[in-house]
Image (cartoon, rainbow, N blue to C red; front, side, top):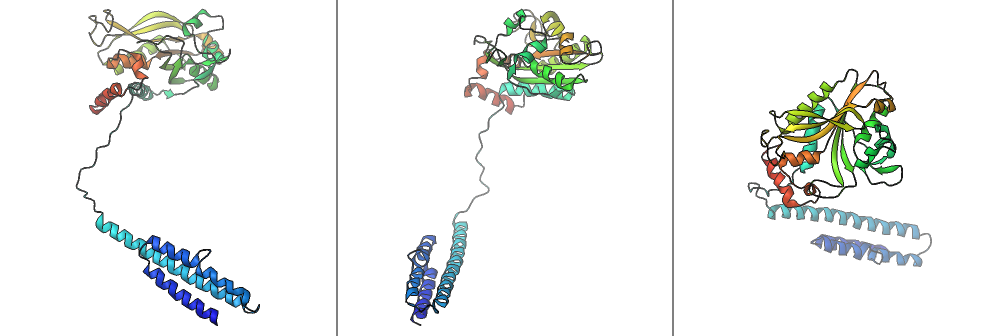
Amino acid sequence: MVQTEEMSQLQQQALIDINEAANEKELQDVKVKYLGKKGSVSGLMKHMKDLPNEEKPQYGQQVNEVRQAIETEIESRQELLAKEQLEQQLATEKIDVTLPSRKMAIGAKHPLTRTIEEIEDLFLGLGYEIVDGYEVEQDYYNFEALNLPKSHPARDMQDSFYITEEILMRTHTSPVQARTMEKRNGKAPVKIICPGKVYRRDSDDATHSHQFTQIEGLVVDENIKMSDLKGTLELLAKSLFGDEREIRLRPSYFPFTEPSVEVDISCFKCKGKGCNVCKHTGWIEILGSGMVHPNVLEKAGYDSTKYTGFAFGMGPDRIAMLKYGIEDIRHFYTNDVRFLNQFKAVEDRGEQ
């Protein structure tokens, strides 16, 4: 009976202390005082050893009832304090929704990204697919599948970074074309562009870099002619540099195309009269192209007597330099904020 009175008094005092707790910290202190390992409720269990065995179960049950009653009251008080705190916060922390917001500083697309996306949008509209490939490539796909056997002297023009004798950093995105044709297993049409980074062992100066970007295109189908290539490249030139641009094709040599041509556009600065941009010729070289070599088609599983194709390759770095008047290719890769901020202004004006 003594123990029951002690329990009753303890529970009543606990309820008083709980209701007097004015904040979360005080309530936590009350919780530790009564329900902690060394708290008052745990202390009640010390009387257990002095009781007859038949009374111990009932006593233990009474102690648990006291514990549960205190826990329930603490939870209720905690909810009430949280509600009061929120109401006080809402009453004191007012926001003037009529004030102008802080202007967020946002960036702009990198000039290379802008140029690549512009080219991609054009070719997507023409029904091309965009295909990615490996930057670390096999020698076979980078050279041999493109009519460049190991003894071919043209490899010297694309001296690269070798990891092993058969693995290297790709020197162009043409391996993507070779792999795509191989996967199609002789099926046509193939109509793709392949953007990406390429690597060549070259000295870094204003117009050269050991790393740069490239976009190559490939079309394979029946009755593909040189005139199809010319029409495609003419549309590309006008899209990038203006509707008044003209192109000219000059004979050239690439191991993976035959015939091969270099493509020039009429100078957009001097309109063909001659200036520093076109080196006073009236023309600017922008890319190389040609009809896919029969050996390349055969290696990829295509019947070269039935199918023909054309391919082209351009450097977005060079095109961006021409479009935006950039004189040093290294600006693209140094992350100079002063340089990049210029293109934020271009983007704000909605210019291409």
